[in-house]
Image (cartoon, rainbow, N blue to C red; front, side, top):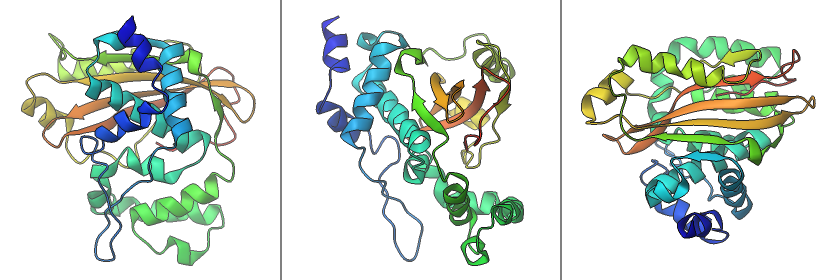
Length: 267
């Protein structure tokens, strides 16, 4: 319990612990004229504190005392970036969770670029703001779509985090993939299974082959929509040990009322 109290009372130390994980999460970026490399803004103190409050108020398995410092810092970073992205419509934090995949996503999604531009035109985004690569057009779409953030507030007491540190056991990879639906459907309601706009550059089959033990985090964050209804952001983050990154593998939005949201989450 002393370990739990120390970690969940991080306060000013939270940002420091999170900073230690920057390299492991692939957050060492810099914007240069010749290439796209990103250095996200440091986490604000209040975002780290709110992430820690989510862990303190919600359910974490195994208990916080059973997590390594690196794993604890990873989940603080992930939750804080999600809060910033969707409660504050912060595109920089959206990209921060996908740092290692930003450079290559333009080529990988080149065939979908015109469809994204078409969605931008529906929002009356000027053509000059649509004359870019996948990330540039996505940034313009994000700004136009989120004139207000899609999340009114996250609900710390409804947080559920499960670290899976022992691999998939006797499951097949197909069964492991299907297990995400059970997490999504834990609370009934209409849902959206997201087609990730910045998918990971390495297939999970390859990661599973590379790893002695596949490691992942199942995350369930409750929030209130701008329409005043309750909803959940459900996500699975996987550890890609070969490139030393946690990456978003699967995500769903689950709503507790027929009115989903005036603005859906972009994941």
